[in-house]
Image (cartoon, rainbow, N blue to C red):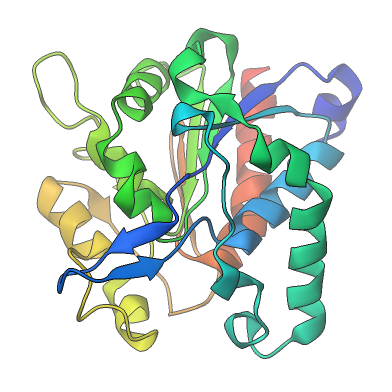
Length: 245
């Protein structure tokens, strides 16, 4: 981290969802967005380390924090922690309201990408051509880093190579578990389950205990299982960037 902070040479793209609704199996629309902690914790760590950050969304639309993620109930009953998350999001409102257009992003300008979760990515990033373009440029390049948290790896489904093969097939990774989805009561009405679909697509998926920090590093791919994994994943990302500086 000291090297990065001193040189301030690393440039990282953060892709956030702009989805405000998640389409359910029964046709209903559930309010969604990015999960606050998965943005706040890595953003704070990366900023402190001197990494230059650019936030982008599809169409440059505002990036909404899922209101549930700002509640005490979703933060282990810790109102102070929830208030901290809300205060950080509010402090960065200008960035979140007017992000860069993902369509205008040149991945060659960045050393890596971070894609936080929340259910929003299952709605928009999983089927976004520009997510595919960015991932297709960065993942095969071992001098670059791809990182994602929780439901963020839903974005990986957008990415195939020139022959149509999934870029993440055979890669070791983690993401929000089907067990965790069931425990929060959202599995039954979800249009698809992330762990199940990642396994089915050919990812080498693993996970730790529900709600605990669990991070998988597979070369230049870094993934965290859930919101609690944000800090550990950010530190792994900093380490990977330093190694490639």
